[in-house]
Image 1 (tube, rainbow, N blue to C red):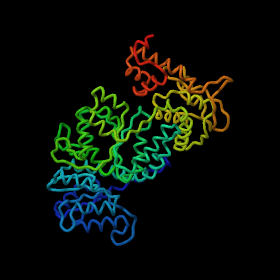
Image 2 (tube, helix red, strand yellow; image 1 turned 30 degrees about the horizontal axis):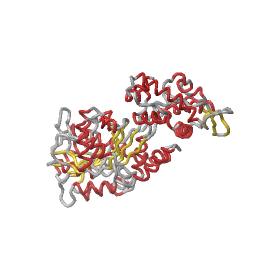
Image 3 (cartoon, rainbow, N blue to C red; image 1 turned 90 degrees about the vertical axis):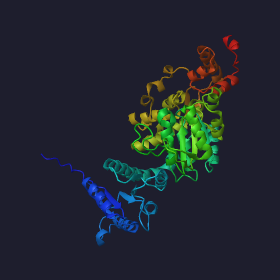
Image 4 (cartoon, rainbow, N blue to C red; image 1 turned 180 degrees about the vertical axis):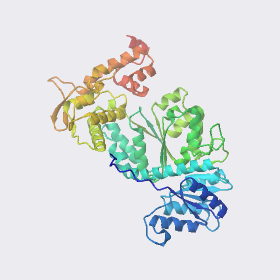
Length: 501
């Protein structure tokens, strides 16, 4: 029996407009594109091209109303009389942002390529065009079309996703963070963030960008630690064709891609000394050269950097340039680990519950008392990111409108599986959404109750590491500065002799 399921309608071929005052070039490109299954039209001038694009978008081609059928890509010659290619590129970008532009020239230079990219060109090709290069450029441009459509939707969600209201917490250090975001956002000042992985550094960087005058310009993010050292320079500054093995075409780096906007460099502590020197130069002079190139490119970028290790320690160890440290440490935002802001866990858990439940189309009203107690006691080595993942998992697994302990991972429900961290005491529900610590007649404050076990854990870590405070801090999953502060607060003498006793 034949299936009754309808077949999806075939997608119409993408439309390409070739704009060149040389009819031989225009016809040759049109013939090639038609053979590649594109729908093609040609124009011999900028004015004619704008007229054709406008009619296609309005659906009035041929003089009678029809469905709009806009051009996905325009291939534009740079050298044309009256309105040259660069001027046409500007007009298309301003009046027809749904059409990507590939620039075509017989005398390509780095300067003109940079200018074209800054004006919004998807790519820049030189004549005579190699078929494979044109195919690749068109594939990129069409992918860019899909991304632009997605970005238009995503930009409407940015304020709700990365707004300051999504950086949840009433801890005093978080309140200070909110104030710093509001203070630095309108400026061009370089910002340095510190904190363990998963504490929300990317979220803070986004919030600063969205509150700045640069919010309409690109926000570009790069995790330096995820890029091999040999490729990091190319990722940041781009490269020219032939600069190294595998460099088959010019590449735009992150600094140029973020021109006019914000560049967020995470894990900057992983950059090599040589890369640190190059970063120092571009931060000071606002200019750089692509790998293998000798043309200096100026850039206007607001840079936000983040480190998951204390940079002052790396400077003391000779692993991070002191001059770069002082250059980037203009405004410092320190994000505390989640285990040091236990009071924020319920609010964060409820926030993530609303987010994940909405994305799954589920109605989940909250956590029962036991589940919230378990979440509050967990030490979160993965910080806020780990809490989000735990809540997402619970939303997936739960079959009721309330999250129970059965919906949580075993290691969260059973603190005995986790060692080396201090867990908060259990909670008692005292009303809808409210909790209190179980107390007795002679109850201590929570801070006093936790001091002695915390002191013993730190002493054990120091002894196990043979009094090496760097190793002890790593074992405790805290940074060395935090360890020093805790030792001082708990009255631990930093000398080995007193610890030994």
